[in-house]
Length: 259
Image (cartoon, rainbow, N blue to C red; front, side, top):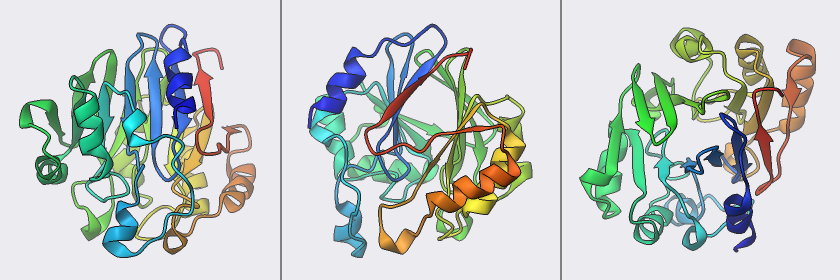
């Protein structure tokens, strides 16, 4: 699978903007104007089925072998966000790539054979630099399933992308990221395992008031649920002025400050 890799490599991003591609589930590839490529929560293998029996229903738009990345960011340690089959392949093929996630990810990085000096362990309420991209973090509410899970805001200069990760609706926790006026809102909508359901995600989209909202975390496992049409209807009622994008796996958009 090389088409997406070639598309990412060929894309030139306007100053301060971002190009992003949905990878299915909660995964995104993002490219900055300086050419840095970040992968957030890529799930590219079948490790969840092997570990838990959850069959993959959406094919990965890129093979781990074809990933070229400067950073791979995991919002938390669950296998559909930190793919322990894909990460060792990515690490081996991208020797300069670094890996970032909360402290729950550290043991998984070690099991993947990724040296500690290539890992950035993030905590909530802090700011980190990933090349020309600034990462701001808050605690996500993923309950006892992952107490250290993070929500992230990726600042590309003129464009900022707020990525919920896996979380319930906990507005005070994510408010510091909302205060940074995100341009793009990437939100889970599946409504199971403590995550935002379509209506709650639309309520949060109304609070964020971005220029563009893109739902994710649906149509991967039957056990995870997820109904994008319900999200579309809820957004039409709760935040009709927000531009809604439903992407197919591998589809991308470029966002500049004049969207």
